Length: 136
Image (tube, rainbow, N blue to C red; front, side, top):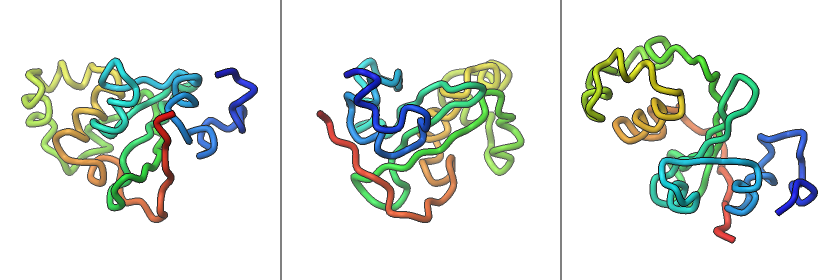
């Protein structure tokens, strides 16, 4: 897949750019599993680093088999963003101290929050129907 096949190369958030696993791979998306399809369809989360932020593509919080996207700053203050959560428990859940966990990249912290608290609690509610992503 080449950059020419990416519909909106200047707008990484455009859903046309996120419509398939090959498109996501061509743009450098990563996930918790080595296989991007497994990361998205089984773990429900992939991400791409942008300039000073990270674009997350994740399960839609209320509509099965649909996806949404959220952008967070790379230097997100987790304690402020998720001030309602017991972050020490999230850290314990992955075998780290809170200090160790807070030093992790935002991608890791977001993944751990999604596993522990779920998509809607981590990213907030979604007020649209989301979009589909094809495996090929």
